[in-house]
Image (cartoon, rainbow, N blue to C red; front, top):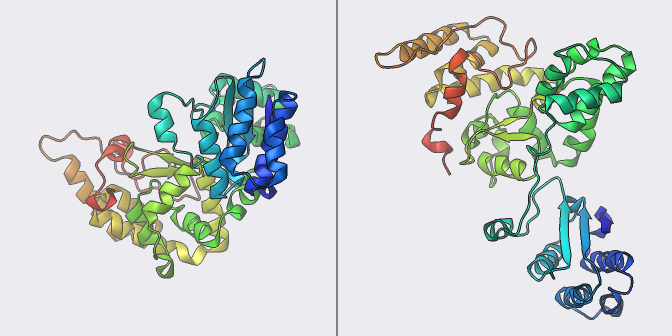
Length: 375
């Protein structure tokens, strides 16, 4: 196996090719000699280097698996072109594995259509209850009561990193009950998401994430309604959501048409807590904007929840009454259960649940988005 642990300093075609040829030579002694000579000479094109490398691999006595780890750290188009060429001309004895936080720009759709691509994405790596129980008990060193691991697995959505952070929280207090209170605002989760996610993004993306965290589900135009006036430039909310999706930045698609998404539960809790602490004065206005957009586009029950958050109880009652009449209209199944109560994000987790629209939440999630949300 030829394993390349990539770093930001490798984001240069010559350096990358030197690392690649060296790794293959180490895995198959003597196989990368001609390619190494071309790289050292500094006159060959990336395609010539790759062709020489694959020529040596094709004559090797055994197969080689080439792993490009942390590929998302590489941004140079020249490297992507070289890797795409390498994959297109891959000899039978070579196999390429790319590990990355984001989908690499390598014409994956074409490889997928040819049946030449095997993918493992977030959903494939999600821990089930049994695996989550084993990880939590082993990492925390505690015996868990029935139901605790299931609740933590649901809250973390099977994210292995989140499960391990939950175990760290429980172990530090030597108390399984700490798992019941585990959330995105826990120090261990907040520190991880701050350092590994938020700080790596440019200011406009950070602002977008924090502003839209109040939403239970997101589409491009709705997010645009919440953005700062100066940030609604060349990049639309739809484009930003698609970028977050491509980069696996804790967004979960709710349809196959790329119209609606939601944030991962822990990530949403982290962002909301950050907003409450750093920008409390902005929250009522953001909820008013969300209410106005949702009401304008026919999502009265969701709009009512934001009206409550904004303190406009008169509007909330009006919206709930209208939503109720719609649900009770002749020929419509009644799945509406009005509930104002304590709907604040600060008092309960509403991710994945229906906010102010009860049992009808799943059906409303599948409702066609307004025309403005369509691509």
